[in-house]
Structures are given as C-alpha cells and as structure tokens.
Image (tube, rainbow, N blue to C red; front, side, top):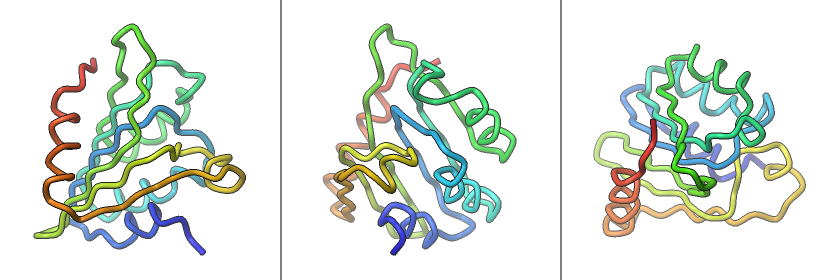
Length: 135
C-alpha cells in the first residue's frame, strides 16, 4: 500500500497547512504527494538541506513552481531534521523518524516514520521548526 506519510498528505484538505523539514528530497514520484496537495490549495512550506546533492535544484524548482514555499538551511553543518507538521481544521499531526523523501526510502530502505496526533509532541516539533535557522 501507500506509505503512511503519503496517506497523511492525501488525507489533507484544501485549507490544510503543511510544514516539512527534510534533509533529502529526490525522485519525481516522491514529490507527487506534495504537488497534489499544493494543487488542492494547501499552504506548504519546506525547510531543506542546503546541498543540491541531497535536494537537487530541479526538485526545488518543481516544488516552487507549484507554489510551495521552499527554503534551504545553510547553517554550516548538514541539516538533518526529518519531520512534518500537518494541520487541517482542528486536526494536527506530526510525522518524524529516519524517513527521507527519496525513492530509495520509499521502496528499498527500512525507514521509520512515526505519525502522531499528540498535541504536546506536535508543539515540541513546532518549536523546533520555529528555531530552525534557514535563509
């Protein structure tokens, strides 16, 4: 079946807000859930690793052209955050773990992706989002 993170994205409505902190995004199929959500009118922000080896420029261009706010973290050290904050009406979810947004992570690796609706956990990751130093 579909990856739990993709099911989470596909379940969000047009008024949803999604914030994603990623160290890797690669592969056309990988970006499809984000692009579908953007086309439905959700507000999406991405904080990504600075290097194009982990997030190619073509991927950045594809996401930006869909109206997704995209920033790279250039703090001197690799940005290795891997979480997303999803808000849809009164529902708030956080997903986190070792999962990268890459074809390999979707199909070949055994990655961890925990999804929780716990409000305290959501707030903890939201605080991390707000403290991220990106361009």
